[in-house]
Amino acid sequence: MDILKKITNTEETAVAAFYKFVDWDDFKGLKPSLTKVCSKAGTVGTILLAPEGINGTISGTAQSIQTVLEFLWDDQRLVDLTPKYSTATGKTFKRMKIKIKKEIVSMGKAEIKPAKATGTYIPPASWNKVISDPETVVVDARNYYEHSVGTFTNSIQPNTKSFREFPEWVDLELKPMMNKRKNKIAMFCTGGIRCEKASSYLLQEGFEEVLQLQGGIQKYLQEVKPEESLWQGECFVFDDRVSLQHGLIEGDFDMCHACRMPIDEKDKAGEHYIEGVSCPHCYNLHSEERKERFVERQKQIELAKQREKTSLTI
Image (cartoon, rainbow, N blue to C red; front, side):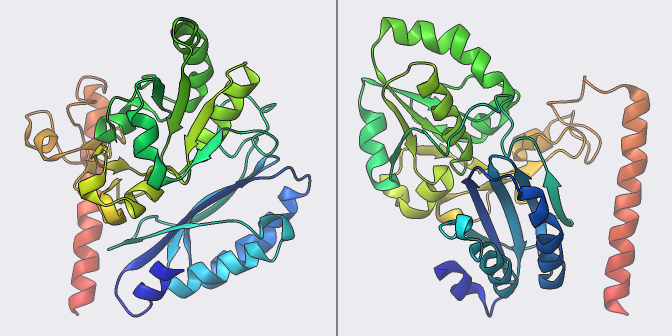
């Protein structure tokens, strides 16, 4: 709650990210009442409900965030739901969405039960020692484009496009690697949820010593001093802030609205970057017809911005 208290009287937007793995059969019944609470509070963001639990990121005023969290905490199964708080200088989401899903993080392995067994939690203060051990295999459980924005020193990235590809990478690459080196595995991801499931999967597959960064990269960047950090770069996030730095302040990355890939100033200075139309990642992926549609869409976006600016000055 410290961050919420700090921003109560400022122009900043509060952001809360949370998840919990819990086996519940009545999760669908939560959606109507939760929708009403979020609507009345005025929060925006995304909350996923599934048989395995809840996963969400919401933003709004400090009070609106508190209202939604208190509603969730009233459910005894969610009483220990622990959000990670950060701030933003503007909107992080366009609207509020509450979705019913098969999984709150999609691995395609619904039989995996992190609520029953998951990797050992390593708090941020102890993480540097763990990953500095040469006997530890450090695995970045995120996707390749997230890894490109920032990662921990000496980490292995499965080069996945989605989390569903992780089990295949384990079979093809991680298992042969571990057969040669009887090491422990230390995993990390943005907020911890993917590691909960990935580590549970590894335990099921017979891996014995599986560790995970408690609270994910976000908690590490919040608690570990920059001068002591082994983090390199920024942390990609799935909202309009795009990336975060130490202290969970907004980073310097932007997003290509044609392909949703993170881009930096070097990318935007290149010949293949056209705002809203293309970037170095997608310039050769879209047809000319599609690029023309993107150009028209960008024109409409600019016109809408201009109308909004004009209305504010009247």
